[in-house]
Length: 226
Image (cartoon, rainbow, N blue to C red; front, top):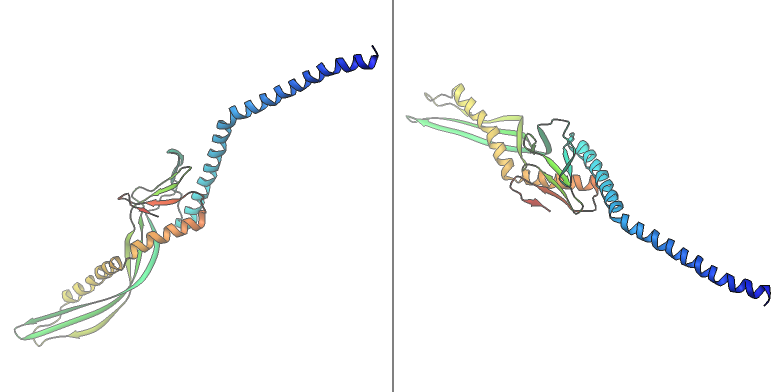
């Protein structure tokens, strides 16, 4: 038998052995990768949620000038560090009028005032504000928006008429002036300004964060604003 034939017979078993070893190594690598896949996926998922948590924090700092309490999968990630009592989202000019007409023994007095106010709508953050970031959604819990206050801009006297013996007193005028802010606050609430503030905050956060999962604002009564 020639040397080449002997070498050929010896090379085939060696080749099969090497192939088998290579296959075993590949299978082992695949097995190890599959075995570690859940842990690697969890690490990647947590890292992505933490990155999103930082974006949410930055968004609230930009929009609301505060850092809220943030949890990731119900685990505290960041505590609220900047105490802010109120978050004003919208303001609107409101005009109101009120009239006093009083007659006594045939003598009438009349006061009519017109007031212009700047009504501010937003959120009372002395109540709980929290953010929970989950793989399938982001939940922002906060109280419903409300009228936080009205600031007087101008008051005009439309009528100031004294009767012969029924005179306008300082108390009458003060009472009419005190009515105007209350009327402005009620008119702002009835105009839907708080609901508009809720929608505006939702839009501002969505534009600032750009999350891949849905962003829900959950208010005090657990009503979701989609």
